[in-house]
Amino acid sequence: MGRVDGKIAIVTGGANGIGRAVCQRLIEEGARVVVADMNAAAGAAVVAELGDKAEFVTLDVRDEDGWQALMDGVLARHGRLDILVNNAGILATTQYQSIDDIKLDEWEAVQAVNAKGVFLGCRAGVKAMKSGGGGSIVNLSSIAGLVATPGIVAYGASKGAVRQLTKSVAIDCARKGYGIRVNSVHPGLIDTNMGTESMSMGGADPVENRKKRISATPMGEAGVPLDIANGILFLASDEARHMTGAELVIDGGLTAV
Image (cartoon, rainbow, N blue to C red; front, side, top):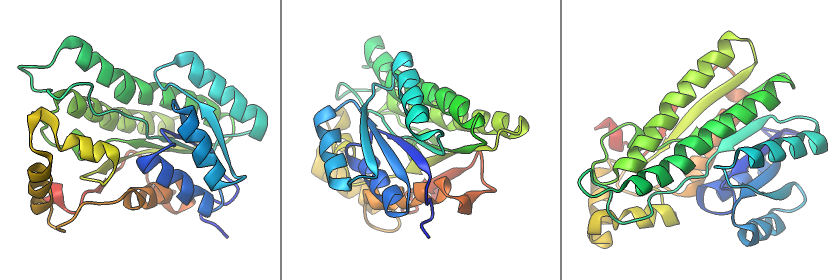
């Protein structure tokens, strides 16, 4: 039997990178997955690869009405929601994010996706899950939500917001007896398009910056999307039945030093 056999899942930002890996692992372990993403072409391609246990829905996580439509559709088609992975996020819209350089519109753009998007997802997910007897929400934060990020100040602040929101929603749901677990995952350097983009932030040489990041990682290598997907699979499954409000750090030991 699969670890999430028969469960209904939504994964935002599911068309590429970590999100795509999460969709694949959930399906491999028995779930039916709604791939939610702004990129319709990429989403359709992923669903074609993943097979008949995947379906695609266009979603802008900043859109309150879009979240409502997504949840209404999932409940109408499947009768319940068991797993929500709030994975969609952006790094930046410019290369400079120090407090000296960042503009207000840059700050707001990053918060709108990374913080507001997760808030809307949690709110919609809790409403859908509590009527069906509970479920698991997994929010993608980052080690940037745990340590200082002077070169990507907006991104770090947004991921810190995700970390704190996760704990607050987790305890609220637990105390109300909803049966909804809410946990956050904190990746370090992961080989994705976003990970590659982060290496050139602030005008840094991406090759040299990557070498420095890897040398600072005790395990001596970058992670891959599957590393994160496996952690999310655990939190989504009943194996993590006694975990809520927790932080799962997957960073090769970087923040333990």
